[in-house]
Image 1 (tube, chains in turn blue, green):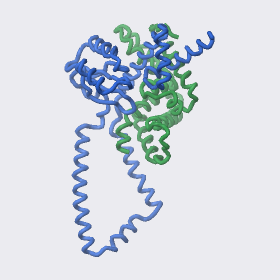
Image 2: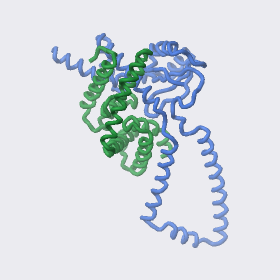
Image 3: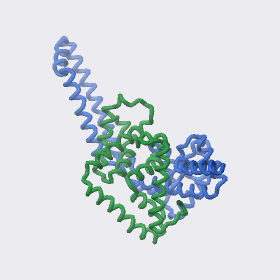
Image 4: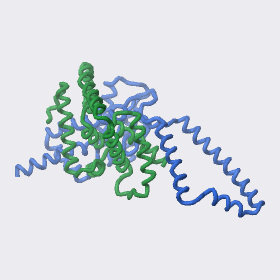
Length: 223
Length: 166
């Protein structure tokens, strides 16, 4: 029995990182919660896990985002791909020449006019998209790439929390969602003060937020 | 493809960068990864999350790149990382920046340990998803994470931070 208990305890300990990240099944998460409630030593180890989780997130978030070069390279390579596929399958130029030659001159003139309008519309739309992209820039996803006044935290809400809970939480802490959730995760960036606050004060805000059951995990974030 | 790229490229880049430790190489890798995705989109069966599929491709390409690099270069990079850990934590400790020390110590972990820490903590991958990305059994995922954390605790201890575990 003792051996069985020890094995169960070891199994629970192995699951702590996934419990902190919120990626366990409901059944396993409940098992871990029960063990944490009955074992102070395990609970203190769990605090160390949460600390690691917070620093791993901060470390990765500090890595920034790739430059536009990566995207340009990718789409240049993709542009080169279909050309190869077409050449391999059939002669597109010969097909198009034959297709156009089969039209009456009047039909061809209407078609050319319609095509010119369509091209102009497309050009206008593309220019709009490009200009908008330039304004926002590909570095948008990079957290902290632009200094913004205020104090911020990264937060993940509990999966069980509903919209009303989160709304009440934001009101209570006078916080607003600046961005998120980030791709592949439930991390949001919250603005918790209009001006920068000392690290100790931000730490206290994080601690207060963390005690709310709506919050799964939170850490201070750079501006 | 643009939507997929916009949604996932930052995380793919960060995962690659943590593995190869070179920004230019990581940028080259992400265009290779998404080009593969574009070419093999028909092969994606939807059994796993797209992000899991992307991270698995990224890992494969990053490790292939690392294998192609001269061993000496790799050793130098590892040495640089370890050197950083032994210098900076002392300074950081004086400032009582335990978090900074912890982050530095994470940098000093082996590639194998770094990747599992990142997949679990940052990329929020379940045991099953990590097993799929890394290509190891689920039980090995749990023990590898355990040993990664144990190694981290040992490096921290060497830097003067005792956590009472393991």
